[in-house]
Image (tube, rainbow, N blue to C red):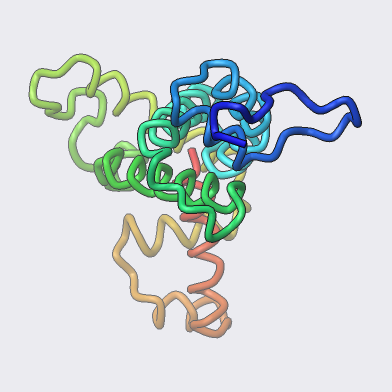
Length: 195
């Protein structure tokens, strides 16, 4: 049976058409096969990205990038592994590339507490969108600091990042191990940077 003779619709037995058969059809320009693969993998790719990005707009945009990448390099699929594994390999690479492109500028935590320069007027090179994104990110971090951090985590962030106190000094003053302080600071930073 030639590649173009592979049925796109499920056989009468009700079994779905294999991914490899749909890929063969897509390679020959079959838009119905393209739509079937898209429908088959869209929700899985979207959910995978949503768990990592936790932002609807970013998830939607990245999902579309994945499918653009997937179908632009469909000829490189060699069927050495399941098509699903190949799809999620592309998904992970697209996500990694997005993180590389979207490196957020470092925001000194001193700016959140009103110390240092006025964060609202920070120089963003005259780019109003960058200034807006900067202010929005700072507001989310400030909200996260107030809402998500424990009192001890707030104190640790202030002592270590705003007052430049060493881990050893903080551990000694709180009577805790340095590893406990590092671990708590790590969790606090993770909560703040997730915003």
